[in-house]
Length: 91
Image 1 (cartoon, rainbow, N blue to C red):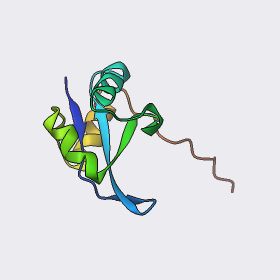
Image 2 (tube, helix red, strand yellow; image 1 turned 180 degrees about the vertical axis):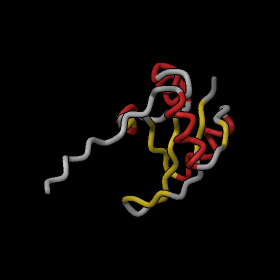
Image 3 (tube, helix red, strand yellow; image 1 turned 90 degrees about the horizontal axis):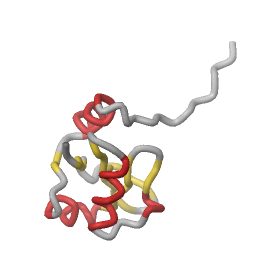
């Protein structure tokens, strides 16, 4: 039962980003994000995108630092993974 964050290694929009996830529920994740002032619009399918400058805020509030593969494993094991839908390949 925890909130996890991976390192800010994901580039986008001229910044570096982390992912913030829960291994319990989206309600837990939304509550944690609200507590540290992350806007709901930063939620994407199954995680929050958090800019590098907010990483320490999340860790100081209790987010557990893990690598990206570990974060994905915990999200998947919790049954909370919502992958992007990919169009079917045509042959």
